[in-house]
Length: 193
Image (cartoon, rainbow, N blue to C red; front, side, top):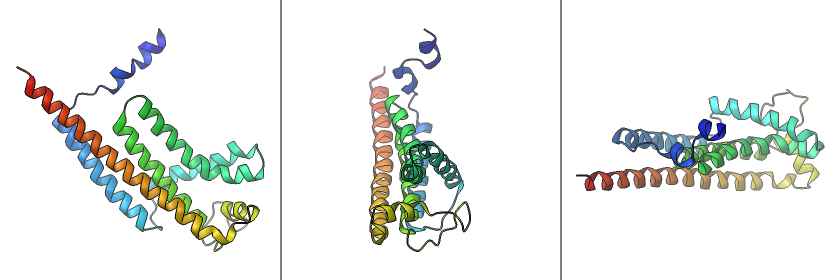
């Protein structure tokens, strides 16, 4: 009984009145997300507050997965950095907050952009690492162990491609959701006496 009172049924949590103001606000968010995606996909030097969040999550991933050994610990940073926003996107989707799910999927895409940059740097090791010069580059360590170091650029490019697809899906889904809800609300208002 407490759970129902605290969370409410899924239908109630997702039932926010569709108004013109909400539709316009979502359209603005979509435009901002599209511009942000273009910047993130074309400028690997861009850094913002979300990168700081991702860095903290990345480092926590090393601790969480480090208990399973060196390779899971090294992979855990990048893995956790992608899994955490994916879990949020899944939560929003499951609770029928589809627009929030789509926008959180853009966070997954942004995290993948960062991971792709890190992978592409495995041989060059030009990125400044959090632990300084004595730190081991996660992706250098992983790709050396998997005998794939010579493929760092190709693997990074493949991850970047997945990020592009996820950005397109996130922004496209956000647009479809917004348009669909606004259209449905207009039809309901048109039928009202």
